[in-house]
Structure formats: structure tokens, C-alpha cells
Image (cartoon, rainbow, N blue to C red):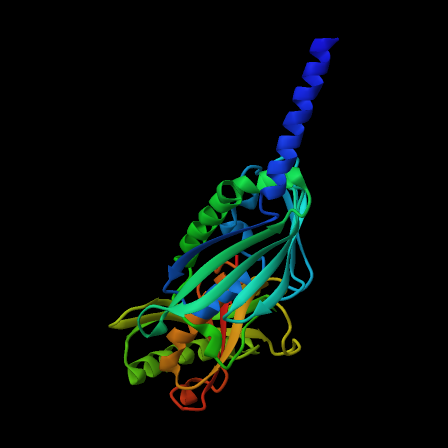
Length: 355
């Protein structure tokens, strides 16, 4: 009996010491880590301001390849939410929700999970840095409040190791993700960007290569258009949309491209999608094919055609940043035809097919 009482007293002393020490431990914890990148602010901000590429950089679900995730709310900005479920106890269930977004300054997430503590948040702070402020400094901050949860205060002793290691790992992966995105600032492009559905279409195509000279390129285009027009007339076809130029290769000396004309039977309604393959009489270098329906990143451009290569790069950078991988080759619709392609007010629709 005496020994039992001694055990209870010892246990009580241990509990009291545990509680007293816990009361002197911080009720709130804070951790921060920073990296720097030379990528445009628009790219960095947009990757954090939504969850389309979240799993590509955040290590949250790395322990469980079978973990389920779902996006809800708007695609970007306040209200965008990443929900997850995992049978792994280390991960559990929870969500990240954007609760504050200031472009070029910060993105704040509210964290809901099974770990101890309340008022958990993760904040990404962005600031210009480097020579001529061309770089972006990324600082990730974690905050948690344990209140009077004594066990939670002890758990806070390991925040730097548990949460801190994940933050470092995540920002390192984020830096790697940035390296896959072309270094082009699309934020100032006036055409805007979107993902569109492109319908299936019958096309006549001629491949060609030209020196990188405006007059030479225009001549090459017109020569191939003449072949296409000949085939159209011989088969009772009419244009089913603007002329397309598909880029194959763009070097310092030469431009390799396809001249593509969407076509339809003269009796078919304008804009009609491709139906059964047509039996056509082809001549010269002209080939016939059907382009299937697909999704594409899309923008518009007004200006001379030599500006199109940069617009294509802007479009690809935007698509990758917003969670869409490009595929195949980009192309433009020449709204005013070849005759106006070097004019200051020439108009183009620019597409890049997506996987």
C-alpha cells in the first residue's frame, strides 16, 4: 500500500511538472523560410494563388500516393480550396483554403487538419529583390495557436522540424517547378488568356520552309495557298474558317510551318464540324486530314506577324502556370489573311493544343 501511494505521489509530481513546464511554453508558434527566383512575378503569384499545380510542389501528400484530393470554390483567389483525404495518419483529412490574396504581395491559406492547434495558417509573401528588382523573394510563413492545450504546446517544440522541413522541401520543389515554365511575363499581354474547346475540322495542308524574312515568308504562304485553292476548286470545297499557320520550327535563319486551310463542302453549313472523311482528288504538295476536337490555350494578338513568336511563348507560360500541359504545335488564325500580316493592326487568334 505504501509503495502504491509513493507511486501515485511520484506520478502526481510528474504530471504537475509536465503541466507547469507546459504553461511556460509558448502558446503560439511561428516558422518562416525564404527562397529567391528569377521568374516573373505573375508566374510566381499565379502558381500560389490557386491549386492547379499544388500537388506538383507541395509535399503534403507525399507519404500516400493513394491520397484523394478535390478542388472546390473558384479556380484562383479567395475561396479556392484544396480538400484532401488520406488513410495515412500522418496526413489525415483536411483542406487548404485561400482566405486572402493581394497580387504581387501575399497569398494566405487557412489550414484545417487533424494536428493539434487552432488558427493554423500558411502565408506566402512575395517581394521584389535582386538587381533592378528583377527577382522575386518568396517567403513562406506558418502560424499555429495552441492556447491552453498543454500537449499542443509540447507539440509546438517540433514545429521547426515537422512543418519546417516540409516548407523547405516544398519551396525547393516549387523552384524546380518554376524552371519548367518559360521565363515570360504574360501579365501585360492585352489579349487575355483562356482555355477553349476547338471543334473537329477537315483541313487541307501544305508544309513549307522559308528564310526568316517577311517578304519570303509571305511569298511561301501565298504559293502554298495557291495549291490549296486549286484543290478546293477541284473538289467543290469552300473555306470553313480563317487560314491557319502551324509552327513546326522557328530558328534564327529559317521558319518551317504548315499552311492549313479548314474546309467544308459548299453545301455544308458554315462552321460545321468534320463528319465522315471525304474522298478528295489531291494535287501537288497538298494533303488532306481531319483535326479532332480538342482543348487549347487561347489568346488574341493585334500587331505585325513578327511579334507572334513571343505571343506563343506567353501563351505557353500562362497555360503551364494554370495547370495545363501543352501538346503538339501552336498555330495562329490569320484573321485578315496573308496580305495584312505585317500591318500594325493585323489581327490573329493564337492557339496551343493541350494534353
